[in-house]
Amino acid sequence: MAAINKMNNGLPRRQFLDYFLSVGLATVLVAMLAPIGAYLWPARKRGGAQDVIDAGPIKDWRVANARNFQVGGHPFAVIRISESEFKAYSLACPHLGCIVQWDGPTRTFKCPCHAGVFSQDGKVVSGPPPGPLLAYEVIVVGDNVKVRVPPV
Amino acid sequence: MNGYATEFIIVAAVFFQCGRLQPASASSCESCHAETDPDLVERVRSSVHAQVGCHGCHGGNPNVQAESAMFDDTSFKGKPGRKDIPEFCGGCHSDVRRMNPFRLPTDQLAHYRTSKHGEQLFGAGDENVAVCADCHGSHGIKRPKDPASSVHPTNVPATCGKCHADAATMSKYKLSAAHPADYERSVHAHALRVRKDLSAPTCATCHGNHGAVPPGVRQVSEVCGSCHIREALAFSNSPHAGATAAGKMKACISCHSNHAILHPTEDLLRTACQDCHKPADGKALQVRDEFRVGFGQLRRDISSVSDELQKAAARGFDVGEAQVQMEEAKTALIALTPAQHALNLADLSKVQRENSNRLDQIRQSIREKIMSEGIRRLMFVPIILFLLALSISCAAKRAEVDQNHGRD
Image 1: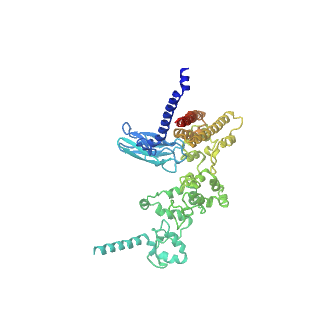
Image 2: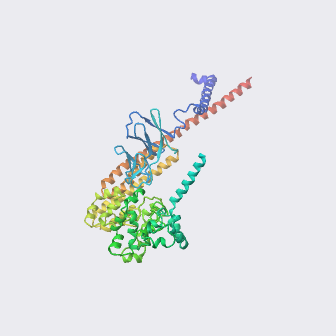
Image 3: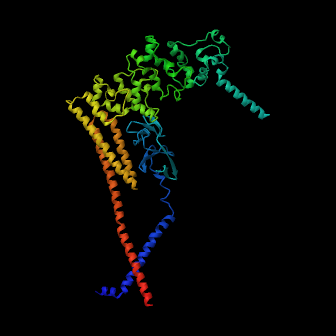
């Protein structure tokens, strides 16, 4: 009852209005400034990185092993060809678009659909594929392997 | 002085080179034959044999003018008879020493002797069969990789068709003249002509080129299997392999035909099986029906989820992982097509089970994204209420300020 009385007297109501307005307007101000801050903040982990995919550290990556990734629904693999050489290829078979699989022991990509075989250079070894696998550029930065993928 | 010497050497080298590349330009053969048949001379000059020169095949002495170049030279061979053409060409093309620098095989003549053409020519003395010049041409021969060559993959069907599409010629050998036209309707011709796939099979791919013979019934699955590896492997594990070995079935041909091989659809299962399996043969037709229904269902499921996926992508959702799963589902379905030749229902069940899991996961991921979007939309309600309250508060504050101003 006392609180209602105070509200009726007007002072607490005024204080409440002032608090609410202060907090509310501050919130709106922050909401307006947030995009500006986000734009000005140094873009270390985002922005411009969508076309360069981090394939992970060289450490623990054995020769003739592949790591699979996807970008925009397009699967691709990065293979360690030798101690110093990495290669990346789209896994879409140029024949009918089936997903090819890396076979480490034979160092070939094999298509499960029509037995197309590709070498570790992406070239057709046998089978019906009319052309090689699409190759992506690999960049080794320090101990990390990165792949530049075409824009999706 | 050095500059003049260098120029002299370059000019001399160019002259020398021209002389080497075009020996025929100094040939007395050309100077006479160009008057009567200039086109003939031009064809030789633009052919793969330009450097061989007329005398390389026909003999004679190109350095002697007029008719003495031919008749006074014992090496002159003139125009060979049809029966002599294979050995005429084989004079060089079977010579390992001559062909080695060009990395060309030297067994074409040996192959030709084993072909139906060679058997007819050398065995039966039938000079109407194809000899080298009928397929390759004579004076204007191009490399097989040259699109203008009569033996370039895109031209092979027409080259074989010159004889094999001629009903009058083929009737003499009791052969059908429909094969070239049938081929043009086939999935192989579609790959060659529409998809521009030069590795697509033409006549020579299945029948051989120089040693051309029709494959026997028992070799058909091996001929088709040289490209369709997975189909052939699955077929060899099917009940049809035994039937083919027993001569009750013509392997691949029984279902797909030979030259007019059309794109196989589910409908082929309906029509082809019935040709051999009668309704009383319940088990075989049951397997057929399960494959047919299974394929149809797999295709419809993929199509339906693919539509959902496309809609989700169009709404701006990140569906990358789901798209990869969709590609895997499609791959499994495409890979089942060759595997079905084993007629093993376990293969079908495996793909059905795996694809069902994949498609469920895709649906689930789309559902979660739609739900997440719904929750985010719901968040608009408190935000709008907050902005409304803020506006009312501003109005109240203004009224209060106005009131205070009034008192003052």
